[in-house]
Length: 211
Image 1 (cartoon, rainbow, N blue to C red):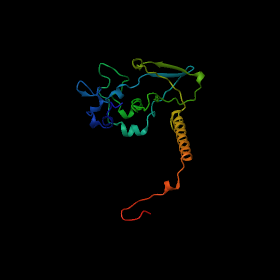
Image 2 (cartoon, rainbow, N blue to C red; image 1 turned 180 degrees about the vertical axis):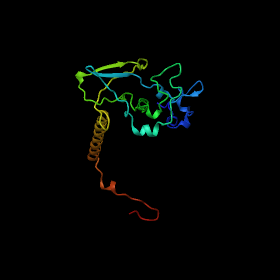
Image 3 (cartoon, rainbow, N blue to C red; image 1 turned 90 degrees about the vertical axis):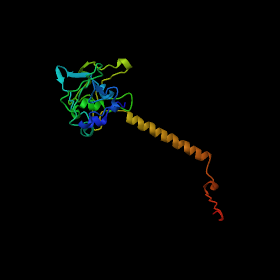
Image 4 (cartoon, helix red, strand yellow; image 1 turned 60 degrees about the horizontal axis):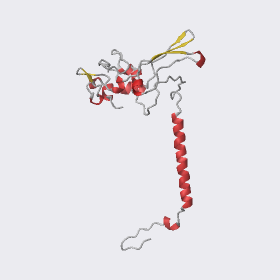
């Protein structure tokens, strides 16, 4: 997805830089900030969690990377004309809060490499057990039009994030491919061994005998 403007996200002097944001570039001749379909499709389902009669706090601060907040999303860039059109794509943004503090947007705009992906919604900073948790969700985000699916995943997040098997499986696949290639090259060397004349390099030069 390329319908976005990183220059506009970073600097208040680039609010009119919307060439790469079509069709969500302007609204009544004024630039949309943040522009583009990536921001326009901001995820807006809401979740609340309870343990018995106790409502659990979902922390929304710190869910994005510090490098994104400091280097990609500007502290002086504020939402403008966002979701003001006739067709609303997803969630809204508070125009009083700069983009560097709109962490739901920051997480959402970190474009995933694969069609199946996870986005961090928030953090519950208490110990939980599966049999004591009640989840209430508000289904706002429309995935029916394109046959998409949504899944709520509760995971223990560490320094490197939550549990994800993709990287481990990727290492296994690459390792097996390297092993198969090594075995194939070994069989080729055994079936067609190199002879001494194959290793002797000759450079015939005009007027000089070859060595």
